[in-house]
Length: 288
Image 1: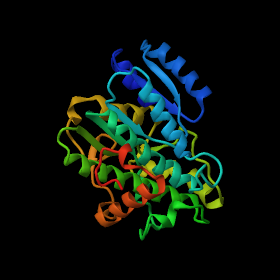
Image 2: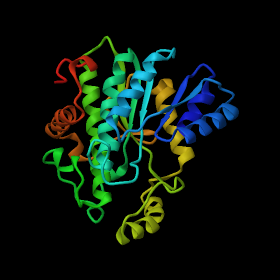
Image 3: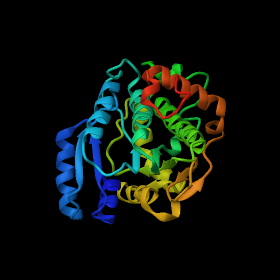
Image 4: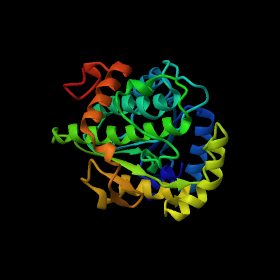
């Protein structure tokens, strides 16, 4: 919401869509933001990233509406309850990666210029006492398993970076589309209330995380990170920058593992297979 607020208040000419699986909450947020920002061009759409059909339905509905040309996409989601998505994939991976992968591929047909941001996390490179990440094949994480939530979350955030880098690489080969794609680390935001620890270890980590975040200078807030994310989407200083990882305000290096191109290509190909993207749905010739 904070990102939408900052984009909406920047100009009344900015048209903003808030897409969420909970349409009632989205409508309430839209009413609040219209009042606070005096921007009437804010809209609520239903989009459940844990359902590939919902992603397709959202894109179809968006294309029917008389909106200005699409300029920006912010990919940020948390997994809902349950172990599996509507399509049988692991909830964390399916929501945080596959839903976004399909969404961006389908929406790119509507973009000629603009910016796309995948919200990742510094937990894409977690301390070994939280999670040990290895990449062999994306299918290892695609389906429900007994892996702990922290490992699944970290892997999904790594996938966000792989995906951002791959979209950027492919779009560079299409100069007629001036679209930049980057990954964004919002820092540790203790005030969101979104983290739901699932065992004793995760509950302990949740209690000490604010202190660790402060010591490591990664602590933030929803308001601050939302404002910085909005800046990346609208400020001229970020124009033309693509294929990068931003730690809030500044360009930074992502983990060593995140630059493994073989892994990124494996993830891309598996994601095409799992989401069943068809050639006519994509701007990329090698999508199938």
